Image (cartoon, rainbow, N blue to C red):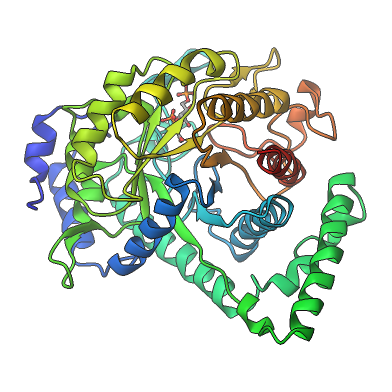
Length: 444
Ligand SMILES: O=C[C@H](O)[C@H](O)COP(=O)(O)O
Ligand SMILES: C=C(OP(=O)(O)O)C(=O)O
């Protein structure tokens, strides 16, 4: 498989790319990246692909989550730990309450670039380039910061490396040990009903572990977990520079992350993003919004997974709560009837964004739940497997999405709104979602 050149990709007029003023600076950043070691090993991508094959096959559930947009300032031990902690807690709830293996995939260690609806942003009569993620420009509203700077691509590499390094240390070094599950949430167990519910599951798991140990099982089996990284493969300069030939298989892999997805705005069949990802061997995803026809999805599958490799392709649907029951059935039915064997995953965030009167981009927790419920209903009626969920979340107690057990209102959003693009579920809302989804899963 040959890797297309960057010039060939640009000839396809890719959407949502930065506009760099200094070509020599871009070339220098790209050549720097090309000389960097891989962030992930191709064999790890293959392992994840095998796990995703089980998802597509109805034997496992995917939990993919993390920030809408990671930031360079957010690369701190506390931030990484908090995100990991909420994902591990959700995975425990799903695994225990629904008795299904959960594949854990961080939307992290590379999620630094954002597609935007508009190229510009205007504040008080001043218009500047829109913020496109720390990979492209800075969030502060000044001409200098909003300039598209290719040197940031090199910073993405370092920020991703630091995040992955700590994540790997946590998941193999003891932090993710199932027997630590009480420690992950001690602080908020005391203060929130969902935390108390979590603690009750924890007590049951303790008893189950003690029983298994008494039966001779090795408790160290629970010392580590498998955890992989993912991000949207949006910036061609970066993803192309990180695409390498794997010495074992002689196939190209994009070694910037284990799993890469193509966004709703860049999934054109003859576009550069589809072209590049059709050539790499990582497991990949494609976001499918409410205008996706079955023929679009089938054509994408033919292009991206012509050999129908188990676990290669995941369709991440993001229809919106009001549309999912209408749009998803025909899509899943016709795609499945065509013989495509993708994993189906629900992103209940991106079709449910709105702006409050006080000017915050938010999502209603009930809409998020309703979209997931619709996703389960459709798959149940078709006899297909609701393979997982893709969620924008954080381990911190932010106030970005309204609703949930704490009934956050629009007025509450100003207390702690930290996302630089889209609103995320906070820790309590994420755990509530995990409990609700575990009920939906166990009803199947
Ligand atoms: O996360 C998704 C998109 O980047 C985001 O929803 C775009 O938001 P915008 O419409 O504010 O540009
Ligand atoms: C931009 C995103 O989603 P979508 O492509 O579905 O809009 C995202 O997941 O960050």
